[in-house]
Length: 80
Image 1 (spheres, rainbow, N blue to C red):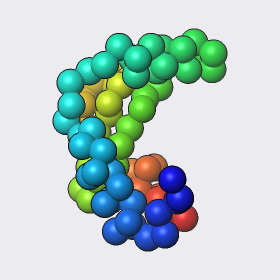
Image 2 (cartoon, rainbow, N blue to C red):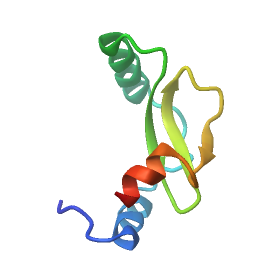
Image 3 (cartoon, rainbow, N blue to C red):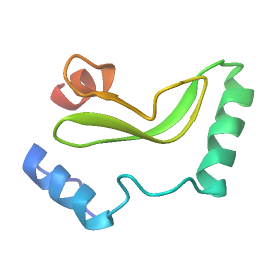
């Protein structure tokens, strides 16, 4: 799959996957645990970013299942 050329294209691809707000999955949880262990990090996550929020498919060390997109590190990375 080619990289989306615009934010609209990226959001279209994200929406086609229909992953937002899906139930937890062991494979994603295991990847987050492994990443945290390898990096010695208290926080790790797999996140998806839509128009308004950062949604955590799997997370370690985070209490909320989502955060606002605006002003987040994820938003800054997408705008870079």
